[in-house]
Image (cartoon, rainbow, N blue to C red; front, side, top):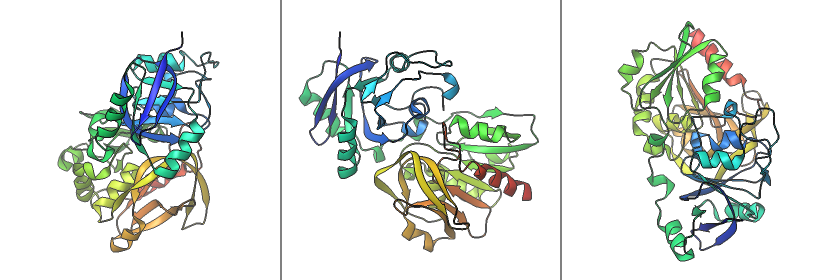
Length: 360
């Protein structure tokens, strides 16, 4: 028996499809991601907290689910919107289907959606608040839920995905990086561990003196969801720690570093989400293809009034993809060098950060 599901948008649009996953109702901001693979990594990425994820590639679930691909302890996206759900996955590492995966974490899915048309709508009008239901709810009630939910800028999403107490990895390594956790991905931790660098993942709200008690050699300001202006404690910690230790930021971490030194942030029309974003390094003229997932960015016009300089730009829209401090060993990137499943063009940024740590 086909279970009906509905997706209601704040502009009054209601889309009808087939439900899968868990029978529930979830609100969030509809966003699209353009990767042809990587739905497990995306669904478990803490940066998708508060969002209803739509993949533009039409077939999802065809290679199943494996915990080896998780980027956190489970699904963080609020719901999943697809053109076609594969009910019979085929992969040696797969342990369950996409629908079983969503049901395990009580997340709704909807298939049979014209994702091409919905993507065009989002590109024209920008991200929209929405509600996805696999329950029997009246259309008018759904539209009311979609329109009257808080904007993503009004929600403290980082607090829903970051650690509440320290986690230590690689204690036997001589070198250690402290991560200010705003929604760290497993691949970022593993990128450091494979380079024989220990990691201590710390709450972003932790007092900077307590952070220094862990005797780190450097600080990584992590990626994460939502509006960076809401994580004021992280901004304050960056201000206090940047003159003591080398520092590197990823995605939300770049925005937090930017705020700490006086740059301004704005919400993008529909953001960058996918694994095919071209960036150019202004120091080397090298072009790389990157994985990205962000809806906010630094206003490039505000950088000149700060001690920062832009080191990399997005070749599609000119937004800042890398910044560094003119005097301090502080730098960041807007994309994800730890990308899973890829691309791996910018994996070298971790080596660059550790080289700076070694120098200091």
